[in-house]
Amino acid sequence: MSGRITRNLQGRCLTLIIDNEEHGNAVSDDMARELADLLDAAADEADLVVLTGAGGDFCSGRMSMGKRSGVQPQALDRRRKTEVIFRCYDAFRASPVPVIGVVRGRAHGFGYAIAGLCDITLAASSATFQIPEMAHNILPTMVMSALIDRMSAKELAYLVYSNREIDAATARTYGVVSEVVPDAGLEAACETLTTAMLKTPRAALMGVKEYLRSAPDMPMRGAVDFAQNLHATINSSNEMLKQQDHATKDQQ
Image 1 (cartoon, rainbow, N blue to C red):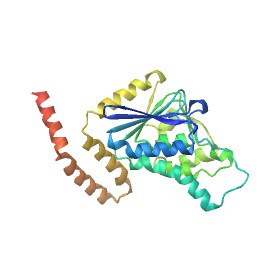
Image 2 (spheres, rainbow, N blue to C red):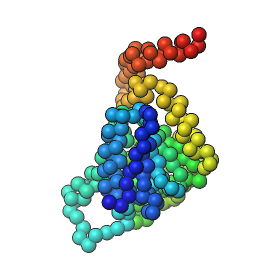
Image 3 (cartoon, rainbow, N blue to C red):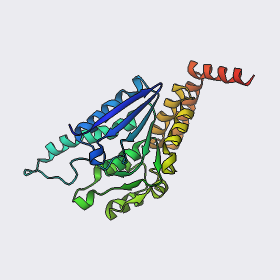
C-alpha cells in the first residue's frame, strides 16, 4: 500500500495524519478505507479527532486521479469501486465526535472534500484549495456530494467548471474553512482550540455534533423541537451536572 494513515492518541484527542508525503499526501483507496475505519472507531477511545497531513500538504487528491486502465469497467463495477470513497465521506458525517481539519499546503480534489467535511477546519494562510477533476475529464460528482451541504451551488459550480485554485481566505468565504491562521501559528491555533473543546464534557461535544448533523435537514419546527429535546437530555445528564458542580466550586 502506498502511504498510510498514522494515528496518535493523547488523552481524549486522537490525531490522524495522512502520511504519503512523497506524493503530496495523495490518498489511495486503501488509505481512504483505513481513514474511514479509524473515524468509525474514534469515539471508542477519543472525544475529539484532529485530521492533518504529513509534511507540507494536507491532501493533494487521490492516487488514481487522471489514470486510466486499458479496459473500462462496467457501470456496476465502477460503482462498487467508488463505494470506498463515499463510505469515507460518510464516516466524517457519522462520527459521533467532532473532527477538526488542520490544513497546510494543498487540499485538492479528495483533499478539498474531506477538508470541507470536517466539523471545523483551520487553514494556514498559504494553503490552497482546488477541485481539478474536470481538467482530467472526470465528472466530479463524488467531491461535489461531500460539499453540497457546505457551499452554495453557485460557488461549487464555479470551482468545478473553472478548475480555479483558491487561497484559504477565499475558501473561508465559501464556507469550507472556519479560520485562517498564519502558517507559523497553525499548530498553536489547533492546540488552543482542542484545549478549549476538551474542557467540555463528552456528552456536550457529541450533542452539538448530533444537532448539526441532523437539524439542517429538518423543517424549522422539527429543528426547534429537536433542539429542545437535546437541551433537556444533555444538560440533565450526570456528565454535565458534575461539570457544573466543579465549575461552581471553582468560583467559590
